[in-house]
Image (cartoon, rainbow, N blue to C red):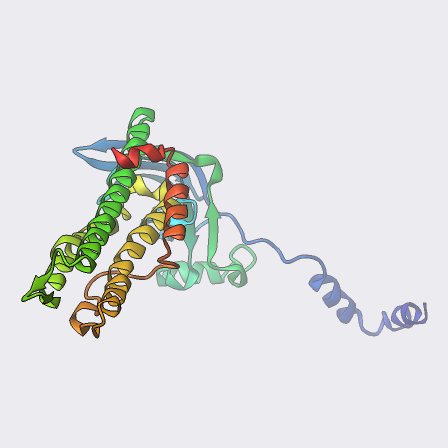
Length: 311
């Protein structure tokens, strides 16, 4: 109570101090929103996606450069920029070159950076600091209500089925190479393959591992990296991580199990067989139980019957 009374007594002498405290109180002001998006329309012309963007930004200076990002959740699909003309209206057709496939529920996010604007725009903004508060820049807007698709309902469903077939094939291929490797390893232990003069031949074993297991695995990993960049795969990012874990674990097992083979044969491992070259072996675990669980998770997520892996 004493503190309150003292503040009231000094109020006539320090009015600015009280006003400053009032200005700083309360939550921070939100960044301004400058853009009104009216419509987003997409179409395909000669296998190239096009997007017509219609909107307006009446409070921004002419020649303001607005950056846009097409996003699927947190993933950036495509970026482009728009320069406002004197009408402050936006009506542009943007060619989305390089985008392949179909996908639903895309959205736009805009970003305006004052420091990246032409000098005349910067000067116009500096004259109206209340309208263009630099402290809240860059000014971003997400247009949640203007979600759009690339492709018709049937095309998007076709893309989903395509992804399902892709996952099934890659898992089957990976498990096939796993079996080929283990069959070869067992043959080496049974002394029915990789022999020369009655002794284990490291060179024929290395040739088998390279040609029948690791080279095909390298090719498979390269195909996965290309597919991961397509629109079709964006809704399946989690499942792609499962697939990468499966394939990388199988690749790493071919090196770990090769090392143990030498030990079981009473030999020192050949360094040429244990140095991974241009093959990804990053994974959490190479245990068969972990591999099995990851395969099950992927199949469940993609609605793939486990029995299909044996077909």
